Length: 69
Ligand SMILES: [Cu+2]
Image 1 (cartoon, rainbow, N blue to C red):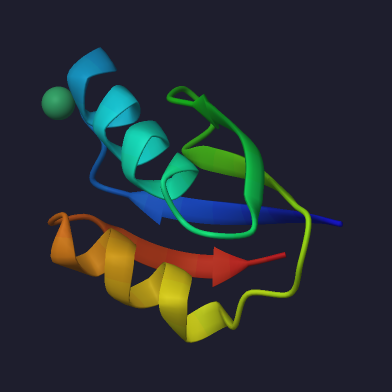
Image 2 (tube, rainbow, N blue to C red):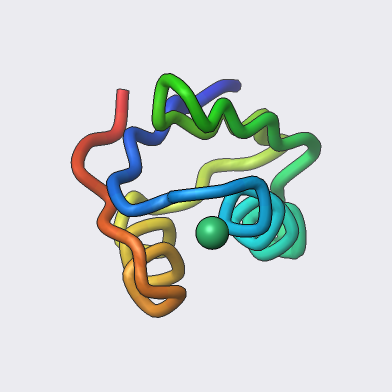
């Protein structure tokens, strides 16, 4: 299972690594690849995670989760 998160507000590599680290720590997340230029995080899942969980996490970090594909 894969989800693509569109995230606004990541300005630098530090932001990307921050998002990557926190998403990776979620139960059920196998792998995270953040693309700073395209403002997306690709998340590979081993189990279903509700969209709200991603929304809360990203927003708490100070970025904006715009869309989940
Ligand atoms: Cu930054």
